[in-house]
Image: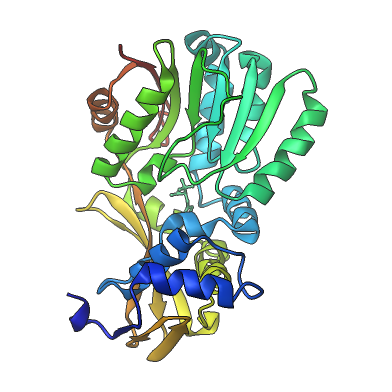
Length: 337
Ligand code: AVJ
């Protein structure tokens, strides 16, 4: 399959990546060999891909915060409205004094808005951008000095090894913002099954899942008038340049974001404005004008399918809160024995 692509591979990915990690120690962020291998494999595939987790370097996390302020980007606002309107009921379903584990915590604002109602015994903020989440947590400690908190820089999409000082009792995984949509349904099932195992007998999940809606609303949400989503998407190339030592020229790419109704998902791509060759240590690739790199899927579920997905993963959806005007679901799900 690789022979049909215009990629160069000088050595097996792992070998090349390890050697390059040493050679480029100053040029990159000391990305582990597994990350550079994942990136070069994705870029070398016939349909070039970059995992959406690479969107979140320090600047990417800030650009995502800006996206959440956009009039077109409804999910954050809609979910916050549900938390606000149904906070007391949500807290009653979740219970107090839990071990609150925030997956993809970012600026920690969503969890913090629930602290007064949830009064967690411990708050664990997990995010792939270690720097961003650590800074957010330092600020949060000043506001809630009585809550035991810790930041965890972790790519939880590939595993959920929690350190020993994360309390095992009454774990409440908090997975808001519809980030589950970045997984395919099969990957989502595998991920939720892993969460279920980490829950223990008394664990639960509070999850926000975006629901299918009008194509015009979705297209605008992922291709906004100001171009913030475009900047967020294009910034992944700067991050990849640092991690992999590649020479992507951002000006040669354009943002593409749209709802693919039949596939049930929003897709983001970067499209080559002109033919070009991109190099990185140990590899490289020709891109034709118009060729795309797939950078994100954002699945939009029907409510019944979202609940089915949880049930197939060992959870029982005990409560669902929705917004009548803008379909979005916040679900409390209990881990089944
Ligand atoms: C953080 C993954 C939920 O899919 O809506 C926003 C990321 N991508 N605009 C989403 C995103 C483009 C967001 N998630």
